[in-house]
Structure formats: C-alpha cells, structure tokens
Length: 216
Image (cartoon, rainbow, N blue to C red):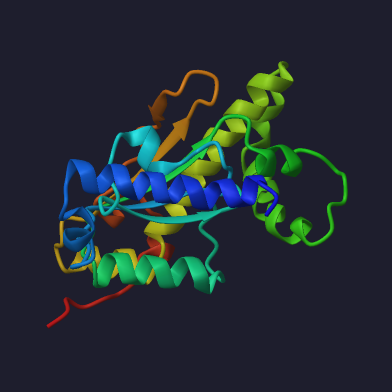
C-alpha cells in the first residue's frame, strides 16, 4: 500500500504507544480509569496552538474545547455543553480562554471580504471591534491593531463566560472556580496573561448578574 502521510499517522501512533508502554507499562490502564482535569481550555482550532504541548501538561490534565477564534457564543450548544460538563461534572477549578496572535478568524473579522458561512461566526468578533473601535482606530500600525483585537477578543470572551448561568451558579456555590484570558505568541511560544481573571460577578454590569440560589 502506498505510504501516504495518512498511513504515517497510524505508524506514529503505534510508535507512540510502544514508547509509552516501555516507560510505564500501566500508562494506558491508569489513563482509562477516568479523568479529573483541573482546567477547561477554550482555545482556537488553529493547528499551531495545541493546549497540552504549549503548557507542558499530559493527557488527562486539560479538558479542551476549540473553535475558530476561541469564541464563547451564548447560542453555541457545543461550547455550552462542554462548559457544563467541565464545571458541573469534572469540577474544574480554572476555565482559560486562550487566543493567539496571528489568528485567522480575528483577521477575517477586520476585513469586509465575504467568506460564506464563516461570516456568521466572525460577526461576533466584528462586534468586539465595534465596541472598541475608538481605541483600535487610534493604532496606526495594522499589525499592532491586529494584535490588540486578538487581546480584546479574548477579554470579551472571558466576560461572556462570566455572563453564563453555568459559571455564575458555580460562583454562587462557592466552588472556587476562576476564569482567565491568555494569548499565545506563535513567534516565540510565550503565553501572555491578560490579567482578566475573575472568581465572581463583581466585574459584571448588574444587568448581567443573575439571581441564583445556592445549589442544595
């Protein structure tokens, strides 16, 4: 059979399994017993931003959801289902929204080019631009304006996380959950903490704070 890149992936898997078993014969047996990750990662689908590798963590340590431009969209049942499972069943202690400089989704939102179905998705990012256009329009460098929108988009998604009933209920229940915003640099591999961590609704406008009772 022709040796294609597709078949090479399967060979890579066999080699990986072999090395894991050689270093720890019970590795897969232990891994299969369950997961208790302390972190939910909401990241971009970009293939250059793998959560475990860039944080130096192992399988089982980070629960991952990825989409174009690391968005928290309140009508996205996929993202909400992952969030609910991570917070209420896995009992994660941290939810991290991690964007990255050079994000194609954010770049698309800065343009007026029609991209078909993706128009509906990047419109959410265009709203972030609109809300921050005074700051962004003062940045004369297109590259720096791009970088800043990446940061502002992550910050907006952290706030949107805080607006969900899933996160707010966890806070009412005093679970100790924290949410954070990061940006990864493709050019240097460094993660930048945007300092938008939250552990309560204190930073939300009152209109977004839900009247919730502590779970029994």
